[in-house]
Length: 220
Image: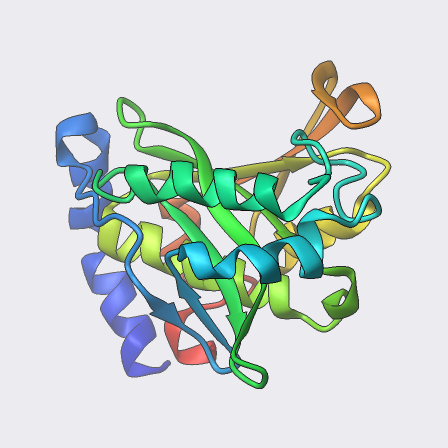
């Protein structure tokens, strides 16, 4: 057992009890810079608009199963980023760009697209440019956020979901320790119209239990 795993087990009960009390115990940190072996997760800058547009937001294949439309022009990307810049002042706003260290350029985004402080829950959404699919970058970013939200923010539930016609997104969730919770029929609308959604989630209890299926800080 590693030192980090021992720490998790010793501290799980206190953290879990704190979360069960309600929203006032959530320790929001805001969009702080996070790092992994190959990635930097940071706030968007307006200068990222070109990379956002060129690397993922203008690609209809990337946005095929997403709930926001493909960007028709870089001006749309600039407007979206501008709206986020204003929200960064709030400690409960979480929206990162995924920067690949090897090229020092944004290749995607990952965010808490919904949250409920009364149950200490965050819902994560993500997308990444097609050029970087199937290389493990998305799961690397999500793993880092799972660790951040449980260990630093004090979340009790992290959830995500995907269109069943996009199974690779579900594979990312599984790799990061999220558990399948079923299909909600005709429960959302994306760029393909009304769609079913496949639900996944992980609880603090799952994360701090020491399960070898869930990546921990000493396994990044």
